[in-house]
Length: 185
Image (cartoon, rainbow, N blue to C red):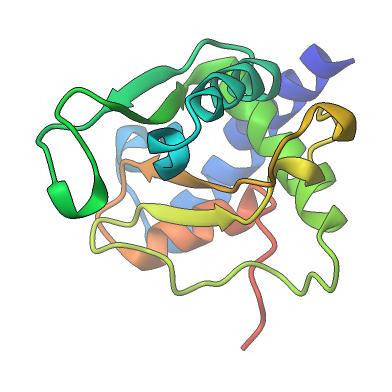
């Protein structure tokens, strides 16, 4: 069933979203139409200084949630005030593309975000100048795959939607048409 959902979301993009974006922004070429190129999910795990198991639990959670092994991020330089040494593991990131990207987007919009208590939509002010959108999740417990008994601490992460657009208006319209529930101001 999950594979069917990915195909449906891809088809929806190709058959519905692309046409609406082309009409709204008057694109002459189909290659001008905005698209999501990738979704990058990352988590900084600053507590690895005192708890070395924190990074391992993050790796296991990312493999479970996103279906691929994360890249472990290391400190580029030592900072004595934070007790941080160069080369120390400080976080993880995963880059989703193609089918995994559409599968995650569908799960995020239709399952995870509606599970958030008192959810009224995501902020429409989290775009950068190039039209990329970043969303913060406060805890991993809202994902249905997570087993509450195995979680040692609630940790959040950032989700960045990298688009090929050059404006915030194009990017927000693309994400809205793909189902992102933006807050009404």
